Length: 148
Image (cartoon, rainbow, N blue to C red):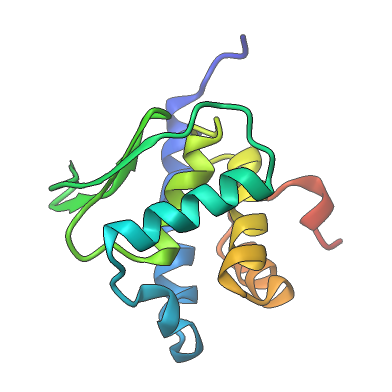
């Protein structure tokens, strides 16, 4: 098993969160932040699980207080439980946490590949626009997204 560099992982997380804060601040993606019912989010997750032929067990999805990250409470997923915090009970957060639930526990290029796929396929996000901004934010991109 490869050794995980905690410094690199902290940088990957910070650059991804910075990207999300900037990219999803654009008005044309407001629909991704519309609060959804737990029932609707679970159904979307089940639809994704089925469409993507994911063999891992489907996670328990619930509303909860989240976990503390710096000064805020944020949603989280450990692979078997996916908890959506107040203010984050929306499509974009579900897609982010589902990218963890399929087995990408770190914010590395494997996670980003899954996250991009979910956002484009199930969030109707423009892939070129998103990848360009990810590059500008130095997100750890998979090789196939890197433009020379």
